[in-house]
Image (cartoon, rainbow, N blue to C red; front, side, top):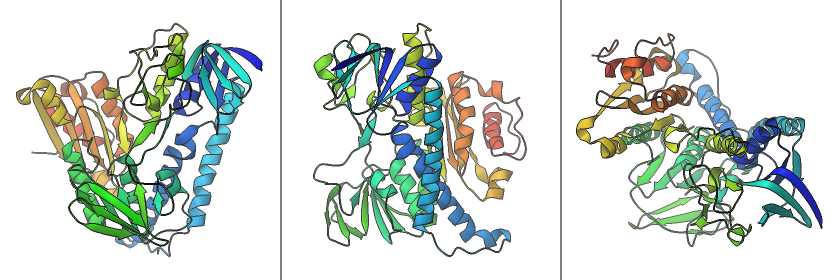
Amino acid sequence: MTDHTFDIVVLGGGSGGYAAALRAAELGKSVALVEKDKVGGTCLHRGCIPTKALLHAAEVADVARDAASIGVRATLDGVDPDGVRAYREGIVAKKYKGLEGLIKARGITVVSGAGVLEAGPAVRVGDDLYRGADVILATGSYSRTLPGVEIGGRILTSEHALELSEIPERVIVLGGGVIGVEFASVWRSFGVDVTIVEALDHLVPNEDAAMSKALERAFRRRGIAYSLGVRFAGVTQTSDAVTVSLENGTTLEADYLLVAVGRGPVTSGLGYEENGVTLDRGYVTTDERLRTSADHVWAVGDIVPGLQLAHRGFQQGIFAAEEIAGLNPVLVPDLHIPKVTYSHPEVASVGLTEAQAIDAHGAAGVVSYEYNLAGNGKSEIIGTSGLVKIVRAKEGPVLGVHLVGDRVGELITEGQLAVGWEAHPEDIAPFVHAHPTQSEALGEAFLALAGKPLHTL
């Protein structure tokens, strides 16, 4: 057995882990980064990056299919799964190489292997022990399934769906959250018949109801079917099909079933509880500074209860490194972290939904305004419909910003600033949004809430 000593040992090389390692090294700390697979984690290799590459390929297919409507002669002869795979893998490989180079340039020691937490604190990898003055846990998440639903064959998770070598004819998507909606959008753009099964009353049910309804309308126009408010009962599969049954007696048949019911924390069997780290339903409990119940052990990313987003993991990783270094950083609360669903159309939000705002402030204390993208020139040019919705406290600050429409994910940072800085619409209204841009839709909504609408009555 060999002992190695570092200032900080990070267990897990995904978004939160590598961000913590990079920032700690930047602050002059010696860092060991333990990763059993590849640095970059789920986001880079099986999540954010490859799925968004798929979504871009889907967008190109839609543009080619509809090119005649804008006077461009083009045809869509089909989608080449091998070509899409090569494109996607090329993007991932390039980003992975860049990340490896960045980690090497910062002098971080990458330890390849499965790590287990031990007292000290330390992380054991095989026969080697990596001791740290502090240890940061960043072991990420996995695709959940439902009781009685065994993954395999024609029953897929998102990781398996990425690796499909064919474009199926029919797919059922179990779960109408972010992952399910994004894959449904891709497959429909590729010509697949898609049905989403969601037990709650709306698609993307964590979003403002107006955004969910707008997405549902858009999906209906695209020919994406969905069953809402009916629970899944079971699934059977043969060598060439799956049959899904719902609790209302409905049965659906398809080539594949994608199980997209959320992600769970990777914490089992890693020595956490045995070494003083408290878990709650598998998640690591921390205080408001990301300290666990074990001395000098911290946790970041998807294993910490809250939003499971790569950019939340980045922020928490940076925060933990700076907290250990004594810089007293500011932690961004989940309420101020932007969320984007990268479907066609996109959904983006930050802050409180209208319903949440009413719960917090009462119906009389909340004002909201919706601006339809039909009035926005750039949205008309790119051919998207959708909404901008701003929620504010009456005579008070902006509480929530919600958008639906193609490319609106690029607008949500302005919403984050408005919510995070507790800006009033009257503060924002004087600022100029370039014309013609989709950002003008946000400007119009702020103008309206400030009592001086320009292009609306």
